[in-house]
Amino acid sequence: MGRTTMLLMALALALIAVAHAAPPTLRKSRFLADKTPPPLSYYDCVRKPPSVCLEPGSPGNTCCKGTCTNTLSSVEHCGNCNRKCKYGDTCCDGKCVDLLKDKKNCGECSNQCAKSVKCEFGMCDYAG
Image 1 (cartoon, helix red, strand yellow):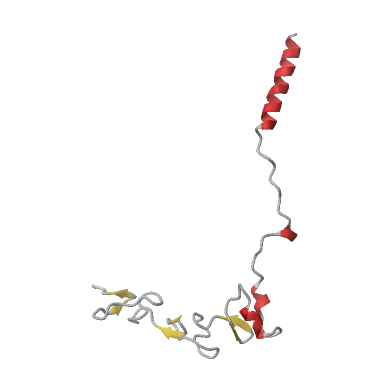
Image 2: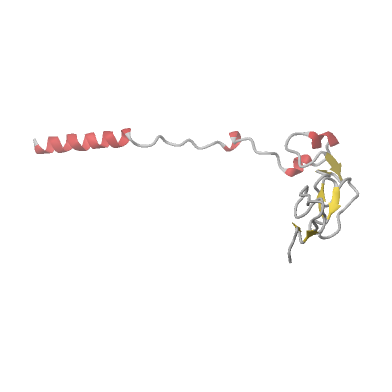
């Protein structure tokens, strides 16, 4: 009788362990993976029509030198395809600006200082 009870207890413990175990996780198929954006080479507008730049997920809506570009923020194509910002400048809304001195873009784009305050070192009202 001792062996039978031990066997039944072991069987009961095994059933309890299986009942409380976490369900197995399903591995995602690499063919059915989540919707990741296409690679940037997809937005190559040399071999494809420039309308590819207007698709969702495109880095920009203008085709510049064969690449879809955002001309409002691209340092290489600021405002239009043939305009490059000089070293140290940033493209804010299609204009090359110096974030360290520009009163309308102080420290970051569209950060405007008050009228009586100067922008120095990218900070409004710098007390140095």
